[in-house]
Length: 463
Image 1 (cartoon, rainbow, N blue to C red):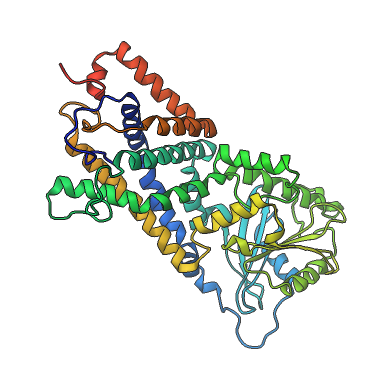
Image 2 (image 1 turned 180 degrees about the vertical axis):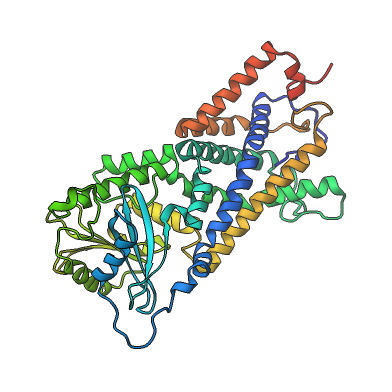
């Protein structure tokens, strides 16, 4: 956001720290705008995942007809495994209604395939690789740009620079020397295009900054650096006994699925050694799944609820709620004969898991239903408007033949405090710190190597 409307009548800014803040705001904008637009669009789509998937898979609901009996869970699981040669059962999803098709996840190594099975006939209605489902693709586009760890690193760096852009923008713009509401809380729409776009940029930034900062910070557990921090804290505090309930990235998630698949195959009967082919049953009796599912259905967990086979001899089956509203996610362990071994409620988890759970639920628009989705959508639309207006302002104000930011007009005090905060942020966010260091080094070295860049970048006025 521009500081052009700060205290008027003063001479050119000479404060060293202010110039640093303004340059960082400008650099942050140059780097962030494409990412902010991309993440806002993909995030807005993902917000409405429940509604989109309801439409995509509507044909698999209410498929049962008449009074014909429903197949047992183990029979349905067998049909799903048979539909994907070489696979084993990974997860059995409890249907929301007995009339709906049953979803079963089967797979080999890290590859999961979701299979929809008719509950009465056992017919396979549909199957698709889990990572090829539309909303999984959108999820990876949003968090990793479909580029794995490299994409995740770019998104994390962009998120950090967006934090800097928002904070420096508020600092540069913050009203000084007056309390007028026009141009602060609402835009002046009839004072010409230049003031219109300035007000649109500034007012939008004021209204959405807090929500945008929350969305950024609540998304950091998925990032490489901050995700690692949280996992390390869980380990150091002795709270990492259970799996973390948020994605550690597509590569880490794939490794986790491959490990689970290997453990499940080790539990198979002796003839499972033939490359996993033609093996449909786990070492426990097939009726174990029936007993576990029957017990799991009586727990009242928020759907969807996934039942996973044991991964070690004598270990219980795992039953986990995968509700979009993560504070509703409970889990249980059930023995082969259907005996309930134990239940873990969301409130029983460590404070890190609970904090991340609340943050992710709000981030994904699942905590408060449609209202949560609409508030998040408003913030994302605001971020898009902020980005577009910043480009328009830069284009209109840019000095002829130069890339630099438009000249500023009034001195600001206490810029050093924001600079210190950015320095702390650089230490806490390594990718941001590295990119900031590169920007500072480039600013120091490039003018010596290519003096003409000083003028082109706007670091000094043209002769």
